Length: 77
Image 1 (tube, one colour):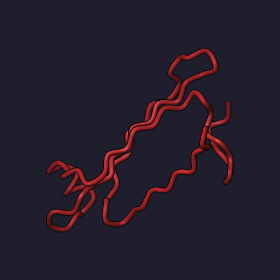
Image 2 (cartoon, one colour):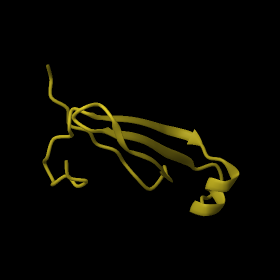
Image 3 (cartoon, one colour):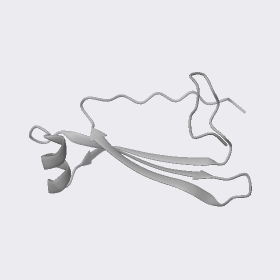
Image 4 (cartoon, helix red, strand yellow):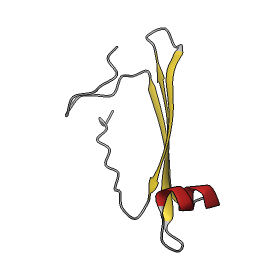
């Protein structure tokens, strides 16, 4: 499995994603991201698993919430 997805590609069924938005960041996050005042942060926790279910990548991303927007396109089942 490649580590990159091309635009328009579907996420592998073995990828798990959790986002939190509007969370107040920690002191360390405010300093590192140079956040103004009470700006929210966006936390993304992602686990990518192999076809056999083994976790092969775990990522935690923290971004300035007032600068980013999320968009998901999911199939309706």
